Length: 277
Image (cartoon, rainbow, N blue to C red; front, side):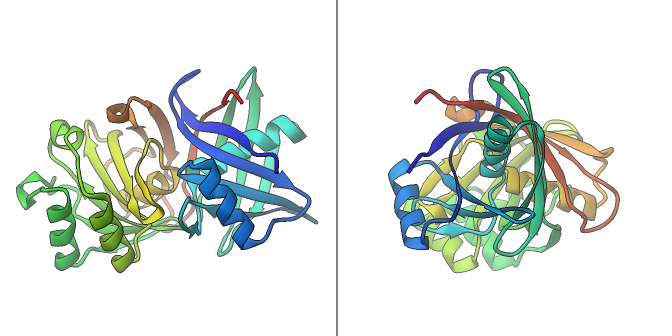
């Protein structure tokens, strides 16, 4: 099975979050896709098969299927642009219809996805308490301007906003404890963010539910964050930039355009680079 390896949301020729990409005439079985994702070992591998009017897409982490993955979608958009030519591609996910756009620029491809619809809700105090304990944080570490919340843009995340960049940089947790908490709460990831300005965020994204300690770039969580900032009337002025992966040595850059309509799709864009075989 031919698997491309593409780093999404790269910082030019470096950084980004690696994803495996399979493009074929038909999707393999779920068991085969799970086996391949485990062998590839990236946080996600995306599988796409041609349909009459677009592409049927599924995403697998090394340990489970996920409903939507932003960085793997960006990687797929890059792969389709390289294979099919620049364009907009319609994708059918398990629970949503979205698009991804790819435009070639040498060995780097500019790509942008339109997320599934967004929603958010206040997080239960018990869940917040458990999450703070997981990272050895306290309520004093939280930025009161961005309350803890359950956020969604195709996948479910808990967002915790931190007052200080140093607190974010020092993030540490036990993988098994994180997996237990995320699975119990039905979370795909926990998104930890620090607002440097109203439009510039630093982020870290533990993905223990998929067996991954941390993602260096997370498009789905960035889309969900954009939707949440819109819900709380944060002064985003229509767009935010997210720097992620810096503390891992895998600097990644994500941009989200936030339209004014509540619940509407968020456009998340960035660069993607083909990784050496």
